[in-house]
Image (tube, rainbow, N blue to C red):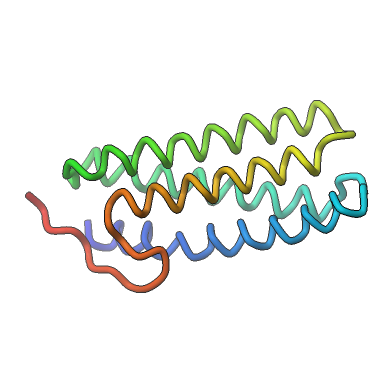
Length: 135
């Protein structure tokens, strides 16, 4: 169980790194009024994919018994982050002329929700943490 926790905890760095990379690339593209290109699609897909893996790891930990009351807020925020990201990325795919601003909004909202979700369990966004004690 601790290995699963450390995988989930460590993966957050990649999620945050990809979120920041997406924000920069999408903001630059949107500012230039460029069309979505391969870099936008690859970075976006990597971000969404890692976000999905992060959610699955978290759900598995809860299913295996690692649950405490503060996790409710964390789970809600993280599920919302994934849902918002998927929804806006689908909209961006259907409206290519608005793809970059929609993806930028998706990543920005997801990042805000992720930060809120981490704060909900009282963990630092960056830094090492030990697994929460089992009740």
